[in-house]
Amino acid sequence: MVVLNRIYTRTGDDGSTALGSGERRPKYDLRISAYGTVDETNAALGVARLHLAQHPELDAMLGRIQNDLFDLGADLAVPEREGKAERLRVLSTQVERLEREIDQLNDRLAPLTSFVLPGGQPGAAYLHLARTICRRAERVIAELAAKPDEKITAAAVQYVNRLSDFLFVASSAVNQNGAGDVLWVPGQNR
Image (cartoon, rainbow, N blue to C red):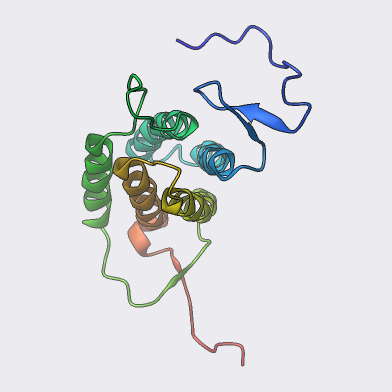
């Protein structure tokens, strides 16, 4: 259990922050950016959920995802080290659950005939915003994983990749299962 009895510590006043392992890194460190961007994704999902009262099944899925995103942040905040006790990690079962939920939502949608512009219902628009933040998190995590001195679990990379797919499908589900999606019209304003 996490206990926070004081919010400010002053330990970051020098521009550094502590990882979950206790190691200090600059606040601009790629690992800090990775879990910070995951946190941004989570915050955007919180806003999207405010607009999903008519979609209780999807809201429940997003509630589970928000908890998973804290797991992902914890995973990223504690680098894997040889010989160290294992910490909280994202698991392949979490990725598999996302895949099942994507399939469940996608089964109700007609095949796409065009790219979809962010918009439609407010909840769908916020899900698109969360999707773009999630894609940024994915880019940062992929860059971090490519560094030879940084280890990222495969499940963490897979989770964030599937999550952006989930958010795309979820936005169409909110837009009357795709009927309310705003479609891109190539060259419309030439």
